[in-house]
Image 1 (cartoon, rainbow, N blue to C red):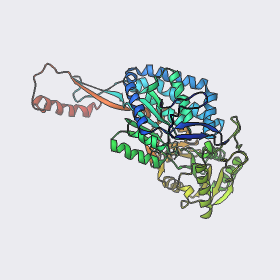
Image 2 (tube, rainbow, N blue to C red):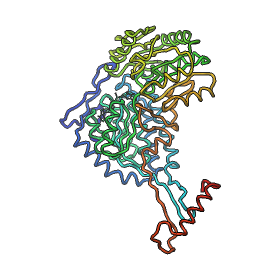
Image 3 (tube, rainbow, N blue to C red):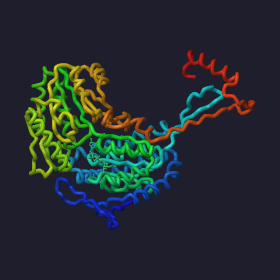
Image 4 (tube, rainbow, N blue to C red):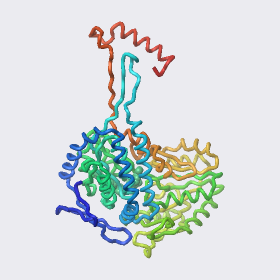
Length: 508
Ligand code: NAD
């Protein structure tokens, strides 16, 4: 690792620029980390490159065993890890546990599925029987894993699992707000037997992240759309592959036949999880005219009963926001909406007695698409509810966004819900659940369309992005006469014959 942690989160700072990491609820200093410079980043990546051949030479099962052992260590130390996540982010126990269980689920999925998915695949050659062909899945080499602060554990490590199991080595660049969670997880990886240079951390801000993109073989980025665009351009210059999990503005559609209690609770769970600081947060709600008033009433009732605070326990519904920048944006969006004619029917007030960055969930009605709260990513606990007159309008409005990450639809007609889901331009749509349900299912690909990203995490798609397919083609006719023409009479006859045969036996 570029920097070493001790039990007290003190690091070998090496006299360079440092970043103080503070608890957003108490303001206490958790520790300081170096702003790693470009030269050190390059050295770390070189060490990783040196370690990569030996790691890639292990079998998928051997790598999987070490990853599973690491997962078990994480599970055994869940209280310490959850405390660290909470100290860095200000989220509640539920939010911290979700990260841990989500990661554990991802480990189980890839450790079990990767041996089959990464095994060389037989494919059909031009002339079957006399020609063989196979696809091998080779690792890229060094993967740079750049992650945000809102889910500091899950959003760095859940991508590292498929990258590592596929034989890549990983250099993490965690968010400058939450580096210690990733560092603790990487320490446990080393304890589980994963060689030290196979998983390393470089700390710092965007400057360090940019330096990492300059030297790795693949970039796996999760964060804002603005940063994602810069990374795509930088990766484009170097012609290296990348995946980008970016921002969202997820819509929810509540149809006339929905179970309104489930739909109200679903909105609150998905708009207020991690104080709304979730890429898949529900940020716009479109409700059928016939049930609109009743729906708003139920949302207000449920929000009023929420428990907000910094206390321990799974009964705390919402914790703190993580940075003042996020809190100010939430307030801006509320003010902009009110100035343009929206009505704040509940909440939206700061709760300084709980901590400096606490705010009540805000419920807005009479909203429309001229307001920032319906267009820009808020990343905070606002529930804007808009009346719609028919389904077509709901789908049109849901798609009227530069983003396309997730969406949800509430209806008792499940088949109809599924049909409607296919009309939404997003990476995932959940029916009668929030789209975080998709993220929790490790076998499902999830990610964004439009400004929400490029590529998918989860499922086979999330594994194959960390591989370079290598096609190997073998011709067995080594005893025949050489020919200097590509289309000698026999080959020409064979091609014409195969054309006819494949009409009747397409898979040959
Ligand atoms: P951010 O883009 O500010 O930072 C993300 C990471 O990128 C940090 O580690 C940061 O240091 C680094 N970085 C900044 N500039 C860089 C550059 N030029 N080159 C390389 N690295 C650079 O995002 P954030 O504020 O940490 O996270 C919040 C955003 O992340 C929100 O927009 C949210 O929607 C998005 N997000 C998306 C997903 C998803 O899966 N789609 C998940 C969580 C968060």
